[in-house]
Image 1: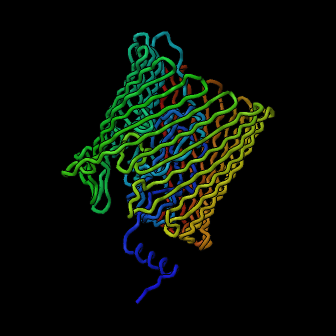
Image 2: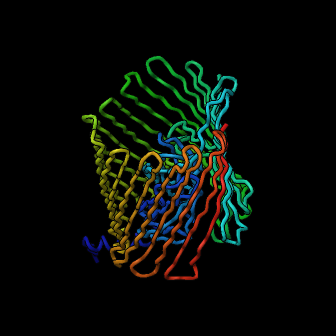
Length: 633
């Protein structure tokens, strides 16, 4: 008897066969919302980054398996510090979202514009890298270092804070030390910021010592070393780096802690302390050619935690790489790089190390009016580079970006990024493709007016569209105006997340930001800011409103003697389903008295109120006091 299978029968049979095995897709995250609150933030206080993370992959994320981290950079996008890694104790399925809060202490010596980036990790692999976003820090009235006849100068700030929580028994102290100068006729830069409380007598929050010696440049503390994108790149760490450049040769050595340890529990994994050691040698040859060789060794410290968790295992990674670069024509640079790695997933077992390779080609063109950057990168399935968290294994990535500078006031930019995985055609993996297209236009006129517009679309889909298929479209506009020492900026952004597999996850987000800087005569200056965001789940119609307002004013009462500073913020969070309705307000007042040109003393107070209309047991009111001594030398 003959059996005839029509097209529908074949498709049905295929579905049955596919249903017999578990399919896996790449871990992919998107950020539906990133808000810094308050913005601007006062130096010496805490800023909280509110982040909505969307699981854009197909696998469910278990509690504790994913985390968010924020890094801060200066105006030139030089790495400064990073937050703790914040884990979420919520399970989120494909297409679902979670709201996370990442607090960061702002050192008291910060002032002006800084940048931050948000990273999402899952199982210690970086799966999302955010763009640089500016945030303003309002300065404290700190005495600047005077130019002394000695070779070292700087300032030191001692701070103490306490409040009515726990009957004034809790406290927070800070020591901020900044030193610049010359030692043995060589430049030295030292920054230190420490935290002290009843639970931790000493927490070195940020530290960096730079010494520019005749033989080498030494950096000790919070460093961001870079070899190549396949070996060491894009990961802030704490340790030491040493660089020596002699003639055609440049040698770099590093030894640092990549990740600090964190204890787990019986149900969630902790994090081992991870160390990295490595070196790179660059050789400049005639004709604009540069050869590079690098090697790294990284391992987890097994005894760095008391409780590892149910599945955590210590890992080890070794890597050898090389690079060649040509810059024979000044606008054009072509670079090729290669790396070979060995990775042991569990050093306590007898498992064989997994070996694999990666390569990358870069092309960069930069003129006075045009810039183009392109790269192609292939990392094989078992490739690992602990020092380069964005060199994800089992992935081909293509990236292009360009900028045009026109008429001295107009900038056009655009970018395209695409990656796909499953390079070995593993039958248990559904190949995932992600495509990101973005464009921006900005104008800066002689009238002090600035205009900006942005658009981006982010599409993620699987080889089987019924397993994974989602898209995020984002559009933004901004306008700014400066006049008579004042400035105002307004930004609007709308984002739509659509999940074709699970429409219940569809989400719309609208965010509006307002910043105003004021200079009201010689004695009074200030700024106010507002950030308003609304997130609506389309399927249910439930929306969450998250609004934050901030202000800061500085008044010179007695010139060169007495200054008053008033600042505060007000934040509200509410849902239309009445599951949350809370408000938090704080106000602070500082009085700074200049004893002499080298010494000032600050005394102040604060009041914080939190009200939860849905759960009044959470309501609290706190009164605080703070003192600060600033010494310049």
